[in-house]
Image (cartoon, rainbow, N blue to C red; front, side, top):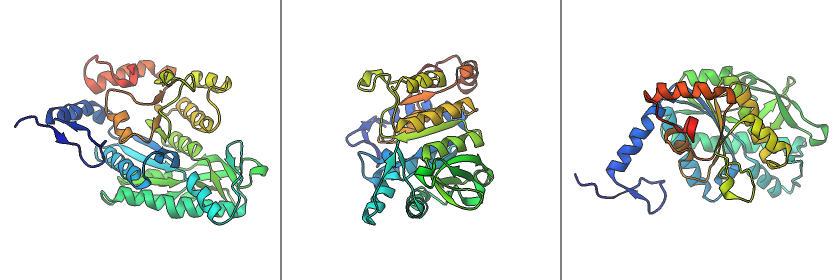
Length: 328
C-alpha cells in the first residue's frame, strides 16, 4: 500500500496530515513509555484555564480522550478539577459580588454553597460524562465523600476557604482497584461536616502525595514556567524543587502560579515521582508529554532521583538511549 497522506482523526490540529509510516513510528515511540507507566498512578489537575483558546466542549472531549487512552494502556489516572471561572460566572448571574484577596476567593456561607453547586453539580458531571462517552469508566466524587479531604479554615477573613489538613485516599484506591477513573471536585469538609472551597492545585498535590503517584500534572493556560516572564525562549524544561524555591523567593514566580508551583515542590519532595506544568490548550498535550520522547512544558523532579532515572530508562528501553525523563 502506498504511503499517501491520510487526514488525522477528529480532534487533531486542522490541516495536519501524516503517512501510515509516521503514525507507526509514533506508536513505536510510545511503547517504552506504555511499558514503564503501566500500573502507575497519575494525578491530573484540570482547571478552567486549560480551556482558554478553544470551545469548552472541544477541549473537554480531547482531554477525555487522553485520560481514556492512558487508562486503556494500564495507567491509573485520577482527575482533580476546579471551576473558578464557572463559580464567578454564576455569582455574577445571581448578583453576588466576586471578591479576591491575595488570589483567593472570599467565600461566605452563600458563596461556598454556590461553589458546591458549580463544582459538584455542574463541572464534575460534565467531566464524568465526557469520559464515559468512551465506556463506563469515570466516577464523580468530591472531597467531602468518604472523608477524602479533611479541611480547616485558612483565614477568618476569607470565610469558608479551606486548607487540606488530611487526605484519606481509601475511596480513591477502591475505585482505582476496580479499574475506574475517579473525578474529584475540590470541596472538602471539616470534622463537623462544614464544607470548604479549597484551591484545586493544592488538592491535586495533596492527593498525589497520599496516593504515592508517579506523576502530578497541571494543565493550565501557559506553555510552562519561564526564567524570564517576558522571554518565551527562557522556558524551563526541567527543574528541581530547590530552583523553584529560589524563583518564588525572588518574585520570578508570582501570583496565581504560586499555589501550583508550591504544590509541585511539596509533592516531589514527599515522594511523587515527577510534577509537570503543561499548556492545556494544546490538543492531546497529556499524550505528548507522557508517551513521546520530546518533553513539553515544565517537568519538576528531585535531585535525588537522578540515578533512579537512569535505571528506569534502562528498564524501559532496554538500552542506554536518552529519554525525556532524564535528558529533555
